[in-house]
Image (cartoon, rainbow, N blue to C red; front, side, top):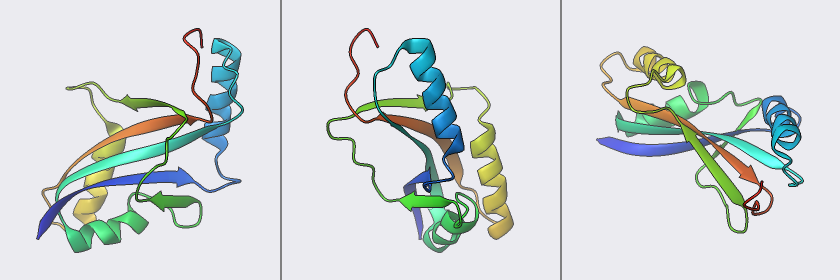
Length: 128
């Protein structure tokens, strides 16, 4: 049976180098006063077999040693910025994931889109 799914992937503590660097740059360039920021990769997967999706979570969408797979993300009381490619713009992360899913199941015709969530530890002001 084919399903649609959303996968959230976050680096484990100690491996979130990209998130820390991005947060540092945002604080410096935009004078953001937040204390911390989480960076979460989001994958929307359409028309995929359920067993292929479960296998792909640990082999395609994440690296079990350094990533945490989340079913949902708590954002209550936080400021969230969602980033995604524009329609028609090439999404390398999604294309690579789709090609890897094809390696798991050559008959797969799933479609994948990707995005990112920047989650700040508090709401940001209009100036920020």
